[in-house]
Image (cartoon, rainbow, N blue to C red):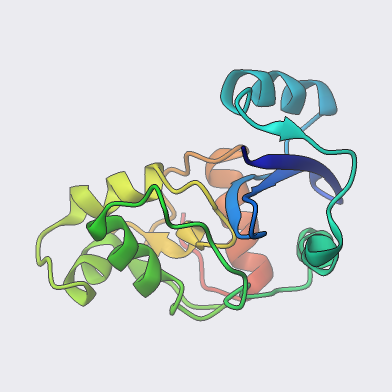
Length: 174
């Protein structure tokens, strides 16, 4: 069974989940309140065991996440992600997306092209919507074809996505 822990950040409380080998299984970006996060956790992570604190192998990651939401960019490329539930296509898309540098963006179409699926904009969009580890797998760096931020299914929506991109130094339109 995966475990999870909440983390206090400058943008609000959030949570991360990990497996037995300390690979990150899921991330819940900052919520506006602890109450809202608790409701979300009960609805979405009831199958995970609550932990009072991050285990030793993840303590540095917790500090890095706090630093990120305090305004210090980080690419998190070195963080191991549990890929056991990913389809082959998701694995390819997420792997390629993790190559997109901090302060850079890519469109859904460009990401599809990079994994050999030209015109797979909707399929890539579905991968972004199902991304269990936003921030670690940086779906906030994926923009619409017109370069606009568009929607963001993680907590905080498009305003959180815009904040993350601007904080990382990326150009953001609408």
